[in-house]
Image (tube, rainbow, N blue to C red; front, top):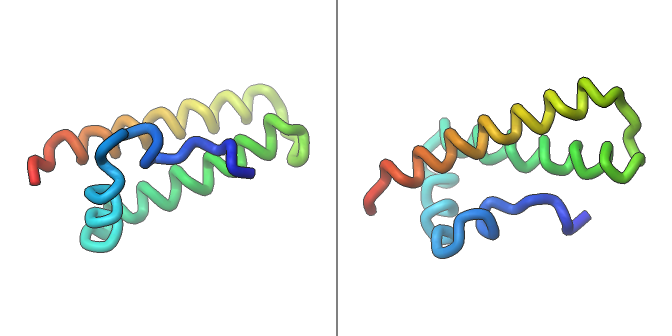
Amino acid sequence: MSNAPNLADDFPGKAERIHQLKTSNNHFARLYDEYEELSRTIQRVESRVEPTTEDVEEEMKRRRVRLKDEIAAMLADDKA
């Protein structure tokens, strides 16, 4: 299931910083893990491996966008 969105792909040039935050910031690590798990779940739903309702699928996608926005804000706030 390699087609799931990957934060390093979504934020070019930030892979090292993502790794640093993931290992040093508990809140960021939780957001990252939740984003990755949600992305895998959405991929399974979209491929019909894990069926669900359209409403549930859309809510999962909205949640993933909110997580990505929060992660983006943390990366933008971090100038290091």
